[in-house]
Image 1 (cartoon, one colour):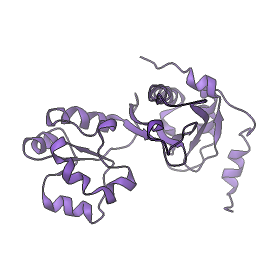
Image 2 (cartoon, helix red, strand yellow):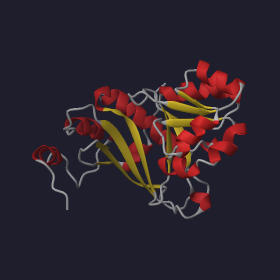
Image 3 (cartoon, rainbow, N blue to C red):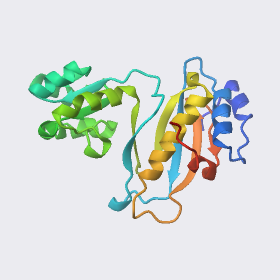
Image 4 (cartoon, rainbow, N blue to C red):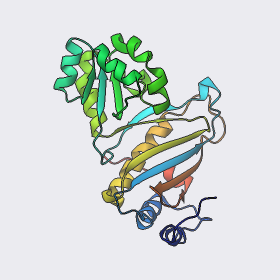
Length: 239
């Protein structure tokens, strides 16, 4: 079993493991217990009451966080012809419009955070599933990453501004970053509220019983903080 350092143990001692904190309290405590020298990421982990083996109980969607993620998002676009030109003009970091780039990805190169594709390029992108799939980088219509060429500027702008994809994993959990410690309490709480709103809207019709069973907030290398479920689900999205 991994041993924790003195800083972590001191931070963990501030968290009451038997208490479910109000969202605002949880965010404040997460910031207080962040021990890294770098600007740590704040993450939300949700334990869902869904069966990931059932096709009609899948959750996969995106949320536009009002304050972004606090990092530079590198966007790759699968497009050809006018679509490739539009992607470059819209600020795409990489454009996969030739065999050389496709081969580079096939060989394992994935130095980008979001992949977007036009429908006519999904055949070629689909052949890279072995590389893109396990990393969550495969373009998908549900995630808003398969769009017509004329919609590429909007999709690229949203991806760079803080659009985050979330999905149910094989263990019935959802893990989503909601910003950086440097954001402060208010911005993080607003990002958290937007995430919870999107999670609720993405509820499958086939979901039974408790849709969300448990919510935990944490920072990179920080202790987990249990969040009061009812209060988290009643958060109001600002604006």
